[in-house]
Image (tube, rainbow, N blue to C red; front, side, top):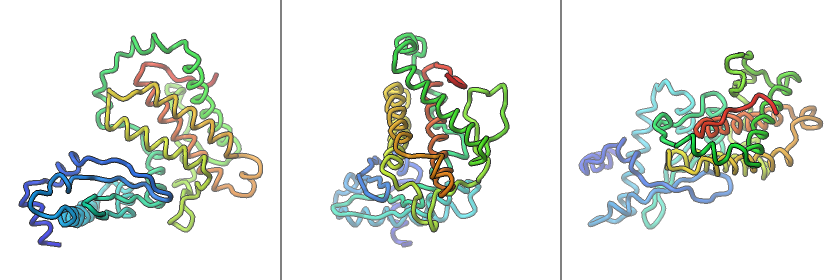
Length: 284
């Protein structure tokens, strides 16, 4: 391990730079979220790419463990500690995020504001974008989805399925936080997602794809198309996955995590609509 770290440092590859510049793409997997990097293949010249990948993976694993020790970012800590880094021939580096990691990540989205590091630097021409789409049918559909999320969350608060943060008149149209239960019961036996329905998983994947796209492209991302895709996927989820009725009476925790997905959808729609200058409604 020590030799691997020395090799890594001798290549003048700082950990932060490697993580920032490492090209990643998500690969399909049934029960995990996996991101793959080809950086070892790019670095391979005189040494075997698999060996380079192994050295980088070992170094990253140790650095992550060391850097997270005592971190103030509790949720980030839990996400990384339940993930693994593996090497795959001919030299891929795979980052495996287990169902436990996904559950921790979903809780982070519920508990914290949804924002990106480069969100303050977006340069979208809001006037032109809004003029083109403000009166379209798809605009109403997306705003309806946002308002529907608000209604579902308020109803769940009234029915004591969840408890929302106190109403703030100045932020009436903004997403309200779920303050109980905390955390939401995303996991079964601490290792398997409670969200096993195909429509739930499809919505989670859509959320992942949108956040990846925003982080990767910033102000070049197709914001409006992302909002449309999320709205469409949410309605498929809501049509297939009940919250009230039998679910509420027989599996309250399932109802609660589905409401967590409702809140994440609402928060992400709020972010997308804010970027293109469209105000979010309390109700329609």
